Amino acid sequence: MKVVALDCEGVLMDSLSKLIEAGIEWVEEFFNVKIEKKKAEEMVFFFSGGTFNGGLRKAFESLFPEGYDEKTLKSHFKELLERREKIYKEVEPFPEVIETLRRLAKNHHLVVSSGLEKIYLEEWLKKFGIINLFEVVYGGEDGNKEKHIQMIRHKYPGEEIIFVADSLYEMRLGDKPIGLARESWQVQFFKEAGASAVIESLDQLWGAIE
Image (cartoon, rainbow, N blue to C red; front, side):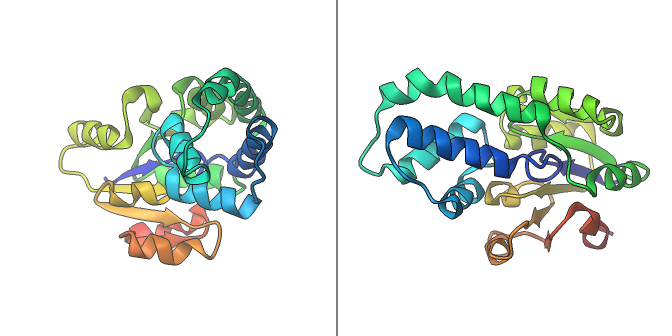
């Protein structure tokens, strides 16, 4: 059976819009800079996919090419985490997710590979009754996603690994990376980054993997 590794945020969890809005409010409040939502969405697409801290650093380097106040970042980082935690407790899966996962689990090894901390991942998956559909859940504590791929290969030797994600970072991972483009402008970037297929929602995955 093939292994289908799925990112969580933006693929299973409909969290990105709320996280982006919370992030914009936080940056504008403590760093006195205005950010357009489209700009923030682009930064998430280009810079996320690894760890939360790593993506945040890349976003700040883009926003403040001449440097930013590290002391301000550290002193108000806890407030950003608290806003983030509140979103994870309230966010829903995308409408097609649960049924698609149940169908996939019948003929594939399902794995979560996320930079999100496992305390949030597992609580959220349990809340919607889907944690048992996954054979393994890898989070930020398990290393980066390259490390996750190594562990998947060790657990499922010889099996093809399909990696489904919504940012460019993951398009170099696994045997068959698939980009999930929620916005039309993302499609060409996925193709150029090496995606074997691009889908618009998770229920389109069947045509891409079979």
